[in-house]
Image (cartoon, rainbow, N blue to C red; front, side, top):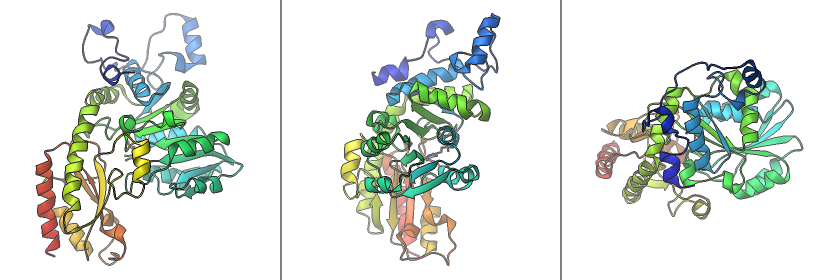
Length: 389
Ligand SMILES: *Cc1c(COP(=O)(O)O)cnc(C)c1O
């Protein structure tokens, strides 16, 4: 399907709402039914129509159709956050006694689910270095029901060979989930590579304006219905109509924003790699990236998020760099219009800082939509202040 058609027309039935270009926000909790038989069939299968907005809602459905098409998937569910989307996708696919194989250091709230919540219900998790397919083969047990992937991850951008993992999982009847937040469907299409469920946070690039949270799941209709019937209705964490409307709005400009951010990112990378205070850059489409070939093979692009190490002897130097930035803000999250910095050493004290540990000198930068020169001069002046300490 044509990308422009998906973003501008698909799912939008303008004749039904006064030919308005922007869709209506159907801000209702419940829907009228005309016959008792209609009510009966909705009670039997709430996934078949509009009954109550904790289930389906027309504004949310416009978004669902677009997001499913972007991923080349049959169907989609949208949640109030990425964390809740992960929660629902995992929970619907495990039962007591099951085992999960996950990539090492997945997104914080996925890891907390595996380490703290699921063990209470008899579900265990083995973490593997996902860069080698053999590690998945070795970790799989007879009771493994799920493989959890994140490629690239959002800190050091490690990849998994998605087609290889999907092939292995299918041969053993194991469900696969990927966190595809870094790439979005514009830069990576996991469903086409054989992954069962593609998850992404909509808070980042889909929203694009740092003004709403959201989480997306795509896959077969059978799988989405399974998740809907399992815990979706119970947790009540489906996205609200207004937030869905903001995400539809964000989608309109997604390709333009990613193109601009890609351009900005390559300018910033060029600047960083020649700077004497910068030791190393970690970015999946940089030739120095250890899995560069795989990145080129399975991703159509990469932008925005990158990490770099600075030559710092103390935590104070890293702090000085971050606090000297005048325009780039210090904040969690990414994917919006604004550039952001996040130091890895935020969780350490000055005494805990270990000069020999490169992680302690690592910074995560998100490059937004500003003018590249504006960002580069900001980074340059902050690096020189940090080097003076
Ligand atoms: C932010 C993020 C999430 C969680 O999304 P929320 O919308 O914040 O709940 C999941 N995975 C990755 C890689 C993220 O960066």
